[in-house]
Image 1 (cartoon, rainbow, N blue to C red):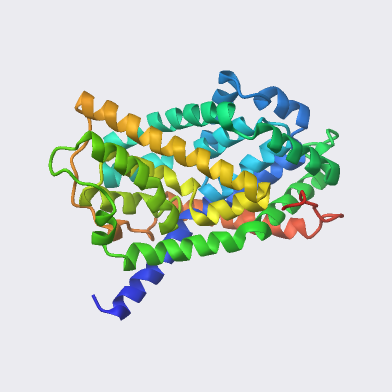
Image 2: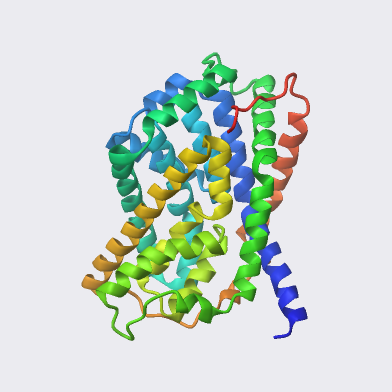
Length: 366
């Protein structure tokens, strides 16, 4: 393949990733805006106000039905946190919104087999549980709480006198929040998609294979551990997004990475460099680093544990010849119709945001 055809494939992949993510971004930011405008803090505190099992289960359920990409999930997670959710529940919401969603299951099934679908959903629950244990043991919950108190002093999120869901002024406020979230991190989203598309096309598969231990046809315990540790790190530096990680994980799995390593790589879209930069904007540098470290440890442990269970149970799949470029992005399917509908909704919200009587004021970011 010459450089001109590779350039064309790169542009196609970048456009395809953006196309696949479009409707999910609009949905995620729209829900984020609606939460900030219509949900009173006392109600959020009642539903997800602590880090207990019931609160985490509710956070996981609401995240799963919110169904979003990683960037929009981060925005929604911040919104529910500022409205009164415990930080651990807010992170559980974010994990579920990216890893416990139906459309991800369809993509995994088509490219990697049913075993990855089952492992992804079971692992998502395990990931939330491990994250919660790490947050309780080592997490900076008090620092997050102080950050929310500071935000409440500088913002109207502390106000429980929310407008009616049928109020035009309320939807103007939600639309203003929608526009604010877009303006805050659209550059990080674009950078992430561009770099991920370039990495998928230009970095040879042999490079990724060299990063992982391989023990031939029989996966060893050492390979399981090393692959689960390296998988999320490869995701961090490959800038994969919530679309690009699946075909790339399929290529890595076909190239020799273990089952758990591929799974940990898929989870890694929550700690790619653009996402870490988003966390930094939302929570400050120190908390972003701590959050990234906790998520990384949880992802690696989850990948290893799921690998052990599936290997001992005889359910781990065999590698299949799937190439990175095998995903067809542009066709008349559910993505086409959802993009059509939510592009109109997004443009409507953007226009409505211009009618807001007062500009939305976000919390002061570090």
